Length: 435
Image: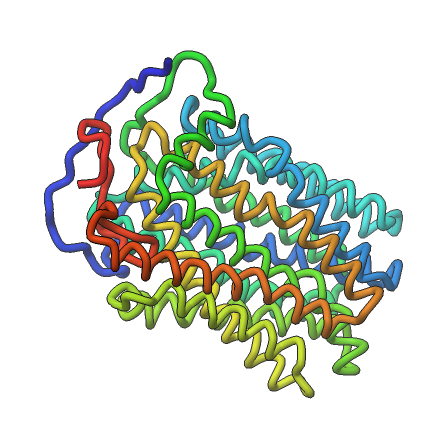
C-alpha cells in the first residue's frame, strides 16, 4: 500500500483569475514561456523529420514510421512514467528529459548538416526522443496544478494547451521558411537550442510542495482499476484517445497532400500544420469560457474536429484545406481542454501522476498504431481516403459520449456529474470523492 507524504493544501473558494494575471505570476509565467519556446522548436523537428524522410524515400508509410518511433516510448513506458511523476520531484524529472532531448537533437542536427543523415538515423532519433517524451508528458501535466491555485487550474490548463497549439501554429510555418532558406539541418539545430529555454525556466520556478508517493510502485493494472471504477473517468480517457487518434493526418499526411494533391512544395505541409495550430490557439484564447458554459460543448468540439479533418481530406484547393485544418484544430483544443481539466479536477494529487500516465497512454500511446495505419492506407488507397478514415474515431466517440451524457442526466439514480459537465468538481485526499 502506498502512502502520500506532503501537504494537502486547501484552496479558498475564489473566482479564477484572468489568463493575463496568471501569465504574470512568478511561477507559471516562466514555465509558459520556456514551454512555448521548446514546443515551437519541437514543431521545427516534426516538420523537418517528416519532410526529410519523405524526400529521402517518397513514402508516406515511412513518414508514419517516424511518428510511430516518436510515440511508441509513451506506450511501452507508461507504467513507469506515470509512477515516476508521483514518486519523484516533477521539476527535476523534467530537467533530465530536456537534457536527454537536447543531446539527441543536437547530434541529429550535426549528422544532417555534415551530409551523413539517412532515413534510419531520423527514425532512430525519433525513437530516442520518444523515450524522453514518455517521462516528460506525465511530469509536465502533473506540474501545472503545483504552479497555480486550484481555482485557477482550468485557466492554467487552457493556457498550457495554448502553449502547444500556439507552437503548432508558429513552429511549422516558421520551420518551413527555415527549411526553404537554410535547409533541414539548421531546423534540427534550432530545435536543439530551444530545449535550453525550458531548462532555464525549470531552474527559475518554485512549484508548491508535491505530495510524494512512497512505498511499492503501483502496477499499471492498479491505475487502470482506479479509472475503471469511475464511468466518467473512463469516458474522459476514451475521449482523449479518440481526439488524439484523429489528429494523426496533421503529421503523417500533410507532406504528400501538399505535393501530390495540391501540387505545391513539400514545405506547404508547414502551412497546413500551422492552420491546425492557429485554429486551436484562436479557440483557446477566444472561446474557452463560452465552451465551458455549454452543456454539450465537449461533444460539439469532438464533432468539429472530425468534420474539419474530413474537409481537409476532401479539399479541392489549399484554401479549403487550410480552413478544414483550422476547424479541426479548434475542435481539438476544445475537446482536449474540457476533458483534461475535468480529469485533473476529479483526481487527487497523489494519484495524479498515475492517472496522467494513462492520459499520456491515451493521448500519445495510441499514436504509433494510428501513424502506421494512416501511412499504410495513404500508400495503398491515397491520402484522401486515409484522412476521411482517421476522422471516424472522434466522430464515433462523440456519438457514444453523447448517449452516455443523455443516459446519466436522465437517470435520477446515476451519480452526480458526467463527461460533459463544466469541470468544477474537485477530489481532495481528505474527502476521497468528488465534492
